[in-house]
Amino acid sequence: MIFLKSESEIKKMRVAAQLVSRTLAEVAKEIKAGVETGTLDRIAEEFIKKNNARPAFKGYGPKNSPFPATLCISVNDEVVHGIPGKRKLNEGDIVSIDCGVEKDGYFGDHAYTFAVGECTKEDKELLRVTLESLYKGIDHAIHGNKMGDIGHAVQIHCEKSGFGVVRDLVGHGIGKDMHEDPSVPNYGKPGRGERLRTGMTLAIEPMITRGSWKVRTMDDKWTIRTADGSNAAHFEHDIVVREGEAEILSTFDYITEITKNEILETNYG
Image 1 (cartoon, rainbow, N blue to C red):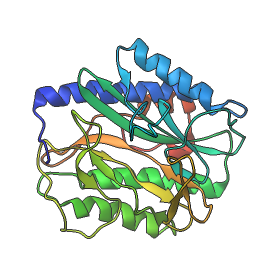
Image 2: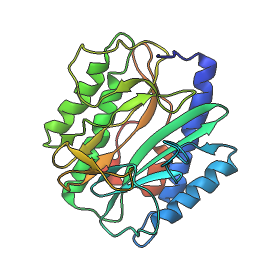
Image 3: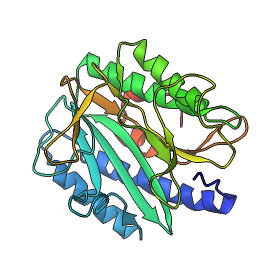
Image 4: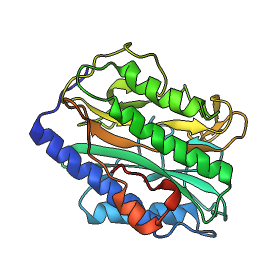
């Protein structure tokens, strides 16, 4: 069931989303070669709790295998759901960090892919195109459009650069639950799928590879990697469907203030 949000609900969701944005920025301060991914996770958990919120990912999932950390940290060919731990980041890695919080009964959930120092020009292109595809999807998240318009915009932009668009993982509705209806695929046909209505709140999250779109799940039952070993990128925003132009609840501004990453500077918020 799709729940349309009132303005008072959207106000609370904006607070939760902005806390995720600030948490990712706190983590960005420490991203460098040699740092353990577990250290980044501790920074995030402490920051979220300090702001009277709850890490939404920690303990999420089946009872026999709940996700054990605050952040999903996925390095290079890991697409999503990487588990933080003793792994140290290396110069040239690309690292996708996904974060979710629950604050005052509402959820925020978004993601950003960082370069650790200087990455390859091929990975820079992957990051640039994936970020652009996120905003192209958001541009189509307006009242009266169809869900396929969002996915098509993401898919066409990435595939024309030769990149793979992951099919097995999709975006989602968000609100009082972290994962609500509807699903938000990163591929599709214009004019097809669920009709978008004002008040729908969505997490749009392109997961894009430098190779095949196919993925595989590792033995830890969480980490998802590309099947062909190619690197992957992941950017995500929380948005509200509106008349004429979607409203973005989250922001990357806090991150870009810290990273000063010219590759990813865009005209978007």
